[in-house]
Image (cartoon, rainbow, N blue to C red; front, side, top):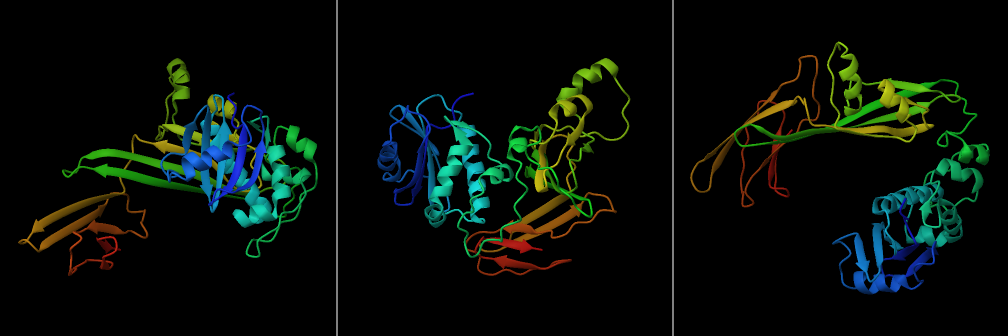
Length: 359
């Protein structure tokens, strides 16, 4: 696997180094001067998050009022580097009570150095799970007065958590009432032509879970999907299927999901983390049923007047219902006066976004 980082720097908005850590000896300690001179002082921070200066590559990201800069001189894995930054910030926030800014770094630099030594080794990311790191890095960060109260410290069992097969869940959890909450959140994106034909349509969704279960439960979740990995078995057996199937274009699972079992049995089997987490994300582009159909009619009544007639029809079943439906109709920026006639709901003219908003 390509290296993710040779050095990491935490800078404020002026370019001053708050904390830095060198993981490899292939870059010098003055690399931050090149970043400050060629990127920060040239006002090119927002153009591209990856820049190459000389023989080194700089990956940088701004979080609050802090720039996190990763420097490498070899063939680095850029996606792994940015994923490391995102997970590291989430780890720091869990120690600092939800805040990550310049003041939090200055107040907790000893703790940050200790964490940086644990989460990366010789440029390769290691364990970034807050639940596991808090088992053996027990130092508490300086919390903001507006942050949440610290939770109860788990029972120390660091060796089992780091080396065990289930590193995202600690043993010994006991609840008086076992509960599992599951939410499916989907977003439909649609682009239509002026004649009403669909140009592009896709659905992005995610499954959110909140588990309060005792012990080490093994959960199974069945989906009526049809993924390309099962095409070989279909060709061999040709089973007769009943019910509708959904073809998922791509799926991303949480690390707790057993991928081998999913490929063979088409069931999502996992030992869930404690609390709230995102089980999986998916995307669908085929077989999408549109929830609404919008029929607009625009007439120009002279040079300064226009009439817009918008009809919306629901195309889902009578047993379903929609809440919070909002239609935005763009109008020219020079619009001075509007009048409405609506069959239901209410409408108003929002001059800040140059739209008629019908709720």
